Amino acid sequence: MPTKQPRLNVVLDAEIMNFIGLIAKREDKSLSVVAKELLADAIEKHEDYLLSKMAMERETRSKKTIKHKDAWK
Image (cartoon, rainbow, N blue to C red):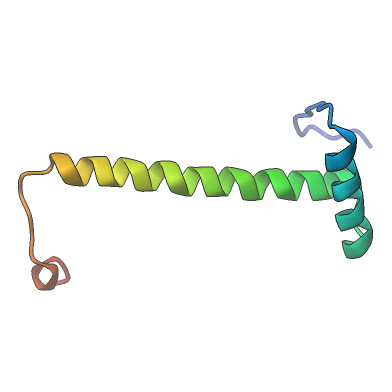
């Protein structure tokens, strides 16, 4: 049954393909499921970094500060 999920074709070097194959075999998953999970993990990592960076930039621009104990009232 065809899926309506978006598709992405990626060309991998042999080393990455072998690594994905080892993970897939160890976890008894398909290559595509392992690749999808690895991409999701990488995106989450980058998203966390970017959000943290944005927060730090806002913090340095902010002129008003609030004491920790007052922030949690």
